[in-house]
Length: 112
Length: 115
Image (cartoon, rainbow over all chains, first blue to last red; front, side, top):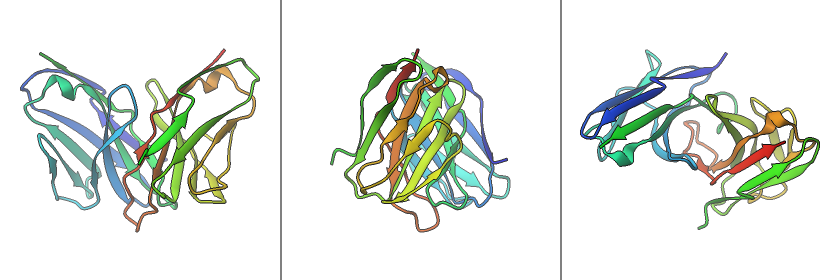
């Protein structure tokens, strides 16, 4: 059965901390792995990863994919209260070129 | 561009009622999909479409119908609402991928309660 597992499910940190969110997957016909941020509304796109070992960065956020070990991590450095959100990991897989299977998400709370 | 729009934002139904959730996109995306999001369950794919006239089932299709008569619109129909369909529904769209997948753009969601 195809699945995406995120850990931890929730995390509380203080401003300025660095956090690492984990995503492991088992799917047939892997195409790409995507990270989204969700703040009480629609998920917003962060990164799409297709190749192992190539880090993607956007400001304080970065992500990397390991296709051999079937996981990805999302790093957030110098966290701010505005980083509080649910972070979703999704894998594009299978016969159709658009279908995503999502993990349950990691709820990050950043305290002042 | 308005992106992906959904109506209504909120809806309360009684068990057995039917309704249609509307989704439209103005980005000329070939691929459109519907997800439901339940607490502790993440987002689960209901139905999807790779182009006008082509639809297929996702992970949780029972109780829902879709059609795709135009590239822009992808309505989701609940035939006979049940309390188990209480959820937040998201529509998403993207270009057809070249094989590596594409970023999907999500609408603002519809919060549905079935009593």
